Image (cartoon, rainbow, N blue to C red; front, side, top):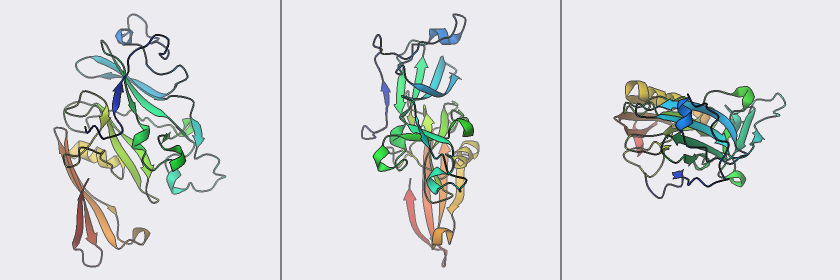
Length: 256
């Protein structure tokens, strides 16, 4: 991935007294061989799971570096605003993904930079997730890039107009040894952002994506927007095809 991409995996040196709580696994557990966590002591675990890579045992941990703040709560029974759809009862804060392996230093991916437009500018660098009462599994690992390894998961990173979202694919992508976000062959310098989590699932299942995600007259639009994409052996190609509603002519194509 490009050095200019502000979201990157950072391998941290283990400094005595600066680690989070050590692994509580017993001597018979594979986790006993993992390096201690590098997260601060005040970190709050959102989700944690063991990962089998076929080569070695790993443990991945999604955590807030400090207790998160309430987000999209106290809506007084009103429908959630667009930015809160899917985040009702949520939390917001500094979110990281930690990857621990035997014989290696722990690796951290700061996820805040992926949340480009959510939350607001005053909270740039923060990430938002559904809260405890709306908790769904985030680390739902599968082989989304079709490279034979189930080491990726989709992550909601924001909202567009009502009914539309921003989702990226996070994990250990084909051709990379460290955590990161999926990109396309056309634009390796930036994460691939799709409207719905289901779009990544479709790519994973069939290797293709062909879907109208923005319909004519939606939010008074006079154009239709559709995805046309493929993925195979870790290589993504996705473009947006824009058609004029009245003539059905293609007026623009954009590689994502």
